[in-house]
Length: 324
Ligand SMILES: NC(=O)c1ccc[n+]([C@@H]2O[C@H](COP(=O)([O-])OP(=O)(O)OC[C@H]3O[C@@H](n4cnc5c(N)ncnc54)[C@H](OP(=O)(O)O)[C@@H]3O)[C@@H](O)[C@H]2O)c1
View 1 (cartoon, helix red, strand yellow):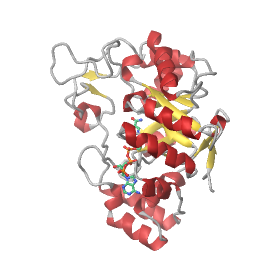
View 2 (cartoon, rainbow, N blue to C red):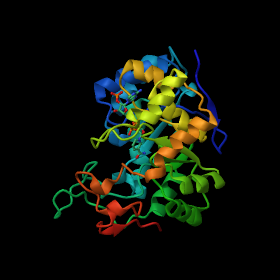
View 3 (cartoon, rainbow, N blue to C red):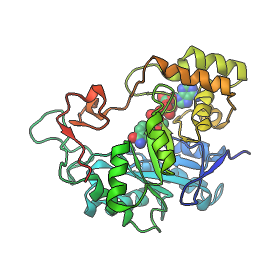
View 4 (cartoon, rainbow, N blue to C red):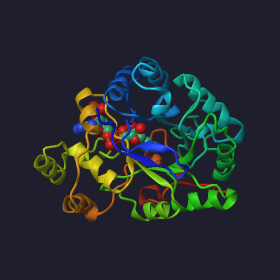
């Protein structure tokens, strides 16, 4: 069985390039999906407290450790949710994640979003006055949270990083602490290549994990697997459109974490195809008509009334991120 390509993070930790995404995987589905994935060669799992399915992921891990893999052969990422950004909350939530997963440590722990919610009132604390909005914590800064991440015992979080961070946010936490995140996990696909951010991260030796590599499955738009250019390349290479999109991210040196709960897709998404320079450029050109960011929490329900990316879609948001 092939276990796929292994990348090396700036810390020296090996990271399998293709991982299984688990956002929107329902609890029962995720348990089967993780088990199928590991039995078919996946060694990298992308998890988060907010996906509310880590207990079931933990149940799957019990079925495969140690009978199929040793714990140390897996690379497990999880993420600190917004309602635990306060320094006193960060390690508590990590402990809860470890308990849910039945593990002693995660290989990578990320700050999920560059925004804090008020703690102690659930994962989406309702705003006390503004209906349909979450209650933001406008006091806790990114630097406060990053310092708490740095203070986490290495025995529980082997590597630390961020997610959905822009250049300004990353630079802000580096300036304040001197500690460079090992990874930035960002939305990245042909319609949102994020070239400037990717170049900045490369210069700082921050590894990029590309999320939503197939497009966006939560807002009713077509996945990029439906794109005729992607489909033509897939047919010619004897692969699937999803494999072409995964290969596009992989050719950029990124780790890629497609989500599926369907056995045949879980298996085929992991089987890599090679893109020629010409095909890579054809896929890249899909973004020429303009870039599209799908994941904008200002548009969520409940809404986060904050501009995270300075995207035009966020123009009406009231608040900006408190970096330091
Ligand atoms: N850090 C963050 O803020 C953040 C945000 C978003 C995502 N993520 C992570 O990144 C992972 C991937 O992103 P994503 O879930 O947004 O989107 P994605 O992996 O790009 O796409 C998932 C969608 O594609 C479908 N799909 C999977 N394989 C397919 C195939 N071979 N052909 C056609 N359709 C296929 C899935 O349906 P089926 O399940 O029915 O196959 C699902 O609807 C997430 O699961 C999560 O772990 C992180």
